[in-house]
Image (cartoon, rainbow, N blue to C red; front, side, top):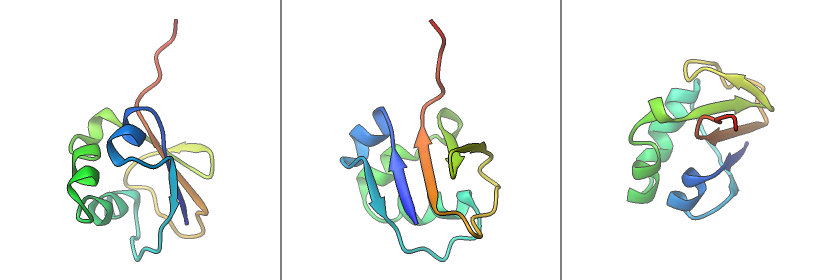
Length: 81
């Protein structure tokens, strides 16, 4: 699946997107897998309460299932202005 990173998440991980092969069942499982990769991933996902996630361009919760999902995007909450 394609995993995309935006804003400071992208800055910490160092890439805007990557193709990830995973056995994760939920978004939370995916975060655990990614965090275990390297310190830069662990730093990016250290506080998931500061993150939002979208599955195939629709906002989702971290307990959402990944079955059939082609794209996961992680980003900080947006603020208006």
